[in-house]
Length: 341
Image (tube, rainbow, N blue to C red):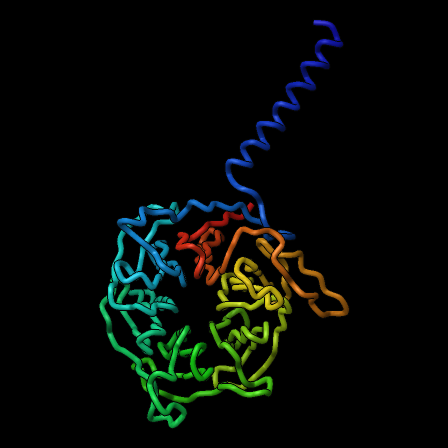
């Protein structure tokens, strides 16, 4: 082989390598996100036979101590669908939650428990991991802030290490209600109002344990913000997220993850994405959304740039750092999975 032939074959071989590499990448899914938080998408991860295991709205997801992924849907044939991390169906349970919305897991080190909110039944339930109801929280009419049970429309819960828990009344009167481990009301704060300490669509809540003193991170979705409160209800900080109607905050490691249901200036279907914030509450990546840009310390408005979601409603981040996304009112699609690259 002369030098000319050798060079030609070498070039063709190299080109073939890159073509094959690109084809392989395409089969695995497009990469989304920014900076060091970039992910490859798998839209078929959670797909099941809808005639056997249907979903309606896929509202929220958690990972239990066994590594299983639990999905909550308001389909009463199977309110809870349990997968392994490869997307294989393990089991299902639940037929009694027509308004199944919020799903929070309590890990005690010995046994896992679930907190489920039902917006149709105006109740919150603590259950075992396999669905046995341990107690039910009704509208706290005794507090004098609700005149009827229908005004209480709970969307989310968060649990402290001692078993005390918080309920976010995100579709109701906008209060955050703090309960003892046995379900007795301790205090409440928030509610509707014009000041920063008040809330409008308090859709989600979580415990932020990333610093020495735990705090609450609460969604103020209509105002495109998260708000940080002390555990006894004092406002500490407002994290403005212009262009992002955020759902519940989910903290894993140093990062906060959240589904963005839609952009406020795009009030039609299909403007959602997923956002990721660092421990300083700065946006570092958006999956399906615009690159985060700060000017003079302020975040410029975010928006959807790639139409991979309709209405993302929640995220679950597993022990490997993969992200699972559940969607509301999106054609009854099953959850997607993003694997970090």
